[in-house]
Image 1 (tube, rainbow, N blue to C red):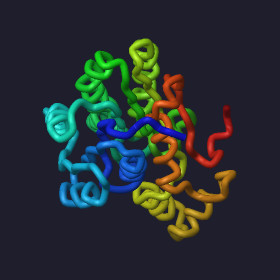
Image 2 (cartoon, one colour; image 1 turned 60 degrees about the vertical axis):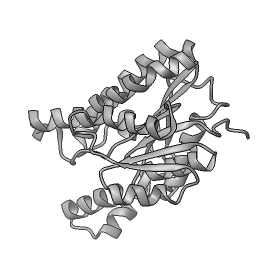
Image 3 (spheres, rainbow, N blue to C red; image 1 turned 180 degrees about the vertical axis):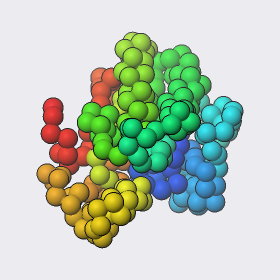
Image 4 (cartoon, rainbow, N blue to C red; image 1 turned 30 degrees about the vertical axis):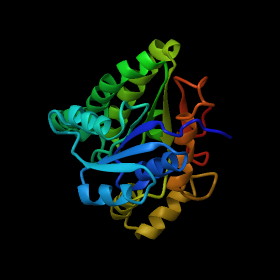
Length: 257
């Protein structure tokens, strides 16, 4: 399949490792110019150096003015952004009864406010050119809230509502807006969650992982590159009629339609 991404300019925050890096690699393999961004500047620049046409920018999007700075640097490198990936790390685990105002505001800023700012910076150009792709990395918790991840459930559900609303407003302009929901993808973040579960239950991390895998019909954790391939398709030209959707990449973990 011809993906139509050759020469397109892509911005991928949170791409020093895990899902974000896999997305950047998948899009680079299709000929896109990719801007990788993350707090670990040395790592993100090293990963960018392994790709055909990419730059790495060290940045913390939680800082004031960071989205504006990132988009300006990305456009300086390659030009206007054609594909925007919305991706960030997750807030600390914890139950809903224990969250504080400070934690809630921090989670909403990380998972919603900063992403809205990024969209507001690149969307006018996409609409003017009549072509754009916005793909957000969500969580299976958007459709089936996850225990002990209250802050993630709160912030990502807000982002999902924003994106669904946005999709209906910009479809006529050639801009698609979609969300991909990972289940248990084999990343450092999931390993950390397994370690936390092991500590709470008295299991070893290996036992905690095995228990988690037993709940997945596929019987295993997903590979980051499998997730990256789904995102690459949604960013492609052939996916022009797919918008406003939540696509699960979870091995069948969420049992509802």
